[in-house]
Length: 64
Image 1: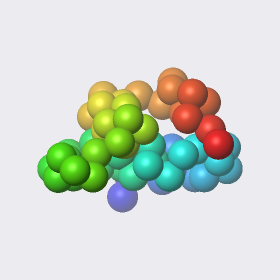
Image 2 (image 1 turned 30 degrees about the horizontal axis):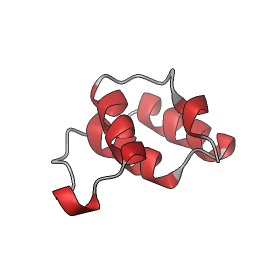
Image 3 (image 1 turned 45 degrees about the horizontal axis):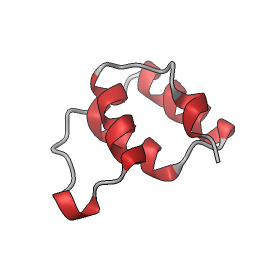
Image 4 (image 1 turned 90 degrees about the vertical axis):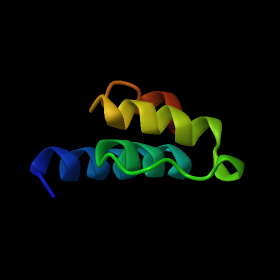
């Protein structure tokens, strides 16, 4: 993995970001296929979109 990815995931873990958002962000960042429809959540989809854009600005919106 690259350093940007590692640093972002570490930051999310330290901030206590919602697990669904983190998993979505990771999947989007890595350009993985989205989960199947029945397993999608609002947090996952928001994370996925942010991950696709390599956006780290919304982490605080998804803290527990």
